[in-house]
Length: 369
Image (cartoon, rainbow, N blue to C red):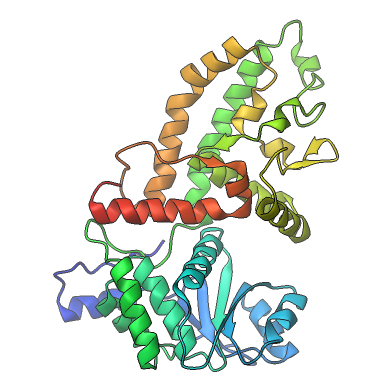
């Protein structure tokens, strides 16, 4: 995770030095279709209008595209048919996006970066509309308007019209610059989560040992075949679980690792349509992510008294610490209270990421994360 090193009182020289280190390499140098890397996971440039251009994006590690080009109305379908995850936000030339639509797109962009995906942002020529969306992204990540403008001045992508600048001024008023920590142009990515996920896996192993010990008359050899919810029955699936922040991050990682892109898309469609009852992970009377199921699901077959005691005495403090560590990766500071929890529908759809970032932004700008 790369942080903006200059604080509000920094001199121009310090600010230029800080901004100079925020990109991996400004120009990719690809012989067919070079892109400009704005951050380690966000690239920008013109519209990819040929199969060779799309293949070049794939060769540069890009897996998702944010298309804001209104006039090339069929390009988004072509990009999706080529295997990219595509978010289409049509903006007319020299125009600016609607505020609500922009917020939704930035939520998606935050989620994609958090998952470690590389995203390509483009309009027709990769200048005005692309620069407007990128400028808004930097503002929401905590940069001041002046710093966001300075950052984009090194790039070809930047706002070009009065309409775009007016829209950004309004957006900046809703997203004030961070003053209690350094602004980060990217949220934490998958590598930073590895130690937390490893410690959560240890907690899961400890919980499994307690579940085994609480299963009457079951030998260690036979425990593997004991009835478990999500595999042998679905009684607990009628009430979908609520996940803590660490559990949400772990389930998201498992979803990316264990499910195909088609399965992930089907899950997102299911969660966008339904209420989450029964659990969206239930498929053919079995949990799609049985090996990565949340702690509440793992303890569902225990006696209720023993289950509550296990959650209170073994799980609660450790899980709260893990949640705070995940929050710290996002906010750069320790939360004053326990981080929020999320319905599994919100986790599977990816909306929990945006909810967390809003919680972080609101807390940091009031000084009480």
